[in-house]
Image (cartoon, rainbow, N blue to C red; front, side, top):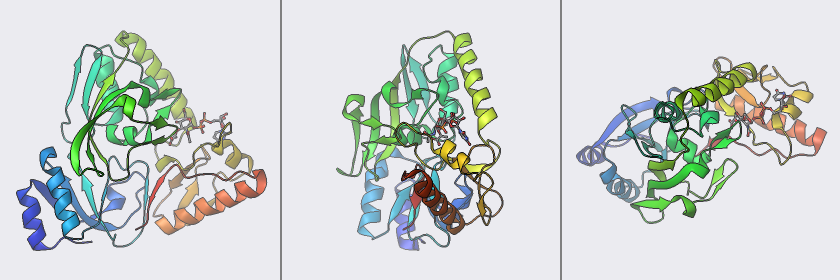
Length: 301
Ligand code: EPU
């Protein structure tokens, strides 16, 4: 979808940088997704006006964060994408509290806090993506989830059309799911973290890094785990037991390292990846009677 000149001028006045014809394949870790116009939201305070302008002009939009948990359709997209600038996102520590911009890299934030003797997030170190994406999905790994550390979130709320601050206790953080609305845009977060000497945090980080390196395909294009784990079970183990590692549709392939990671082994399309996902889901249903639910977010229209 392309923004016409008149609206582009109004967006510019609101501090938005317009990048035309950006391929989502270049903004996502899977390397899949068609082109559209990208709007870089350089001024938080004008976001409500930007949203009002887009709505008034009938321009559909989606917000893309780190792009690490997204499967996006092929071909020209029927919506524009919004993005926060990622250069030099704000991070500071005050006592046990960390104040971090949502556009910050999650791993960068864990390291920043660790160097200031704040721990508790060691497990999240290798989870790719932004802090905002981690908040939205309640990212977790190795027994750590971000949700319990959240004290405040500043966000653009779709329901009110304004920038608001929510208390952590007013947000529901479940397994890979939160009470944020799809149109909410995370802007900043305040986390409360347990004090811990840097050396101890570093030791924990090393253990998690090693576990991740030995079990996940870190050097291939993926969106992390494709399916949520069913209650009490493991999607990866079930897919593995069916002998599906290396199974592929075009260049979309079940990783031969971790069976719940589906990788883009070349020039996979969204259609390839969807066929692979449906095929594996069907095989798991037939063999185990379990209906796997997507963990990856799918943008179709
Ligand atoms: N397993 C296999 N074969 C495989 C993969 C896993 O047999 O191909 C077995 C493992 O041996 C283990 C069990 O399945 O006994 C669980 O595997 P693992 O420890 O790798 O964890 P997981 O449940 O597959 C979850 C998260 C990951 C997170 C890891 C580590 C989900 C869907 N996945 O994976 O998160 O990194 O634990 O905490 O909750 C993600 O969210 O995208 C993600 C990758």
